[in-house]
Amino acid sequence: MKWNNKGNFWKNGMIFWIFLYLFSLIPVLILETCNFPCADDLGFSIYTRNAWVDTHSLAAVIEAAWRKVAEIYQTWQGTWASIFLMALQPGIWGEQYYFVTTWLMLGVTSVSGLYLFHVIFRRCLGSDRGIAVTVSCIYLIVAVQCMVDKTQGFFWYNGAVHYMFPQAALFGLTGIVLTMLGNTGHKRKYLVIGILLTAYIGGGNLVTGLECGIWLITAIVLFCAGKKKNVAKRVCILLGIWVVSFGSNVLAPGNGNRQEEFSYRPGVVRSILQSFYYCLDFVFDQWMNWAVIALVLLVLPFVVRAVQNYEGNFRFRYPLLVAAYSYCILASMFTPSVYASGDPGSGRIYNIIFLTHLLLIVVNLVYFYGWYWKKYQAAKRMEEKDLRIYHISSALGVAFCFIIAAGVNQDAFTTTSALSSLLKGEAASYKQQQEERLELLLDETVKDAELKEFVNKPYLLYYEDIEADADNWKNVRMSGYYRKDTVKLAGE
Image (cartoon, rainbow, N blue to C red; front, side):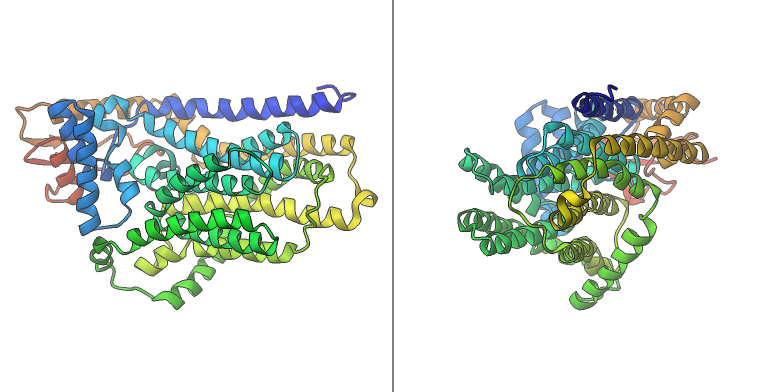
């Protein structure tokens, strides 16, 4: 890197972070070739898999997917948009295509993150492309490597598509709403895309659905206060779509049936109070670790450069209010699970809260430094050379911590866990055992299949397995998927 050319330094830095992010995904994508559907992957796609096997007609598969939506909507849950995608899990076309799962989840996470940070830094702050791309890559590295439940986030299709897809759509919708503020063309295009995303989010998981409604209402209030009434009117249209979509979700008959499975339901007020507690516990205790500190250290010089070069009129007057509101947003993401079941949820729910947590950290860094800069300005300006030294130093420090943490616990990071499974041969062994099972499951002469228990269970790939009891729900769903009378684990 050329110290005498600041432009080259930051451009080279952007290329480095892009390369590092893409390079870190290689072991993860190789590992995914050893992955196979399981549990609810099978149950939600029995109709579609059988439709494809019988007809090889895409129309028949789509019809079967909507049939599953209608069934589950009446009997179990109202998340119609998610159920439709669940029914289309890649394995229905053949188990060899299940590897698409990780490509899809990493793809939507990456695209939505890149787009939203592009809007924040390029459109809102007027920064150069390098800052937006670099911050995006750093965010994505921390998000992917430190995901709370990596299996449910990137490798198990059913759980990932129900949470990662709607959350990515919400990040995209947020970027579109922010874009509407600018004097940009294609207003109708942005509105149409916003309507489609809002309808989809409302029919997805309840956590993201509720968060979407809160964001839209907040945007309308802020736009009205800022005398952006034309934009506020367009967002009102999105809010109306959300009311219909999310309302059809929460009012589904199946939701009542599902809630009967839980003996403790705290009610609205107590659920909200418990959500604030869980937010403190998870966000400020369990997740406030060195990886989050690393995110702050790595993005800070880019935030400083962006704010110091900002030429707009926004004053960043209320940093404490923004921080408090960010906490309320995160707390609200715990509420649907607490209200429905009395507990804060599971790994796949924590994943999207974690993604939002990281996003809000960056947003608050921008806002707090914006407040500081507007108050002190040139008297406290950080020079380019100091920022470059700081960036290199923090990157080296984070790399040192990463090596130590990965050496102690290889499963702490997605890439090192994938690499470990590949190098130890457990991923290949797991794939071989799965293929041996498939020989029985795809053999039409075998009506009662007894499958050997897995010897190797890679941390990232293994989620759940069938049991010795043929009447277990996972066994029943596998037998329906492969058209067997019974499926169970073989005895000793």
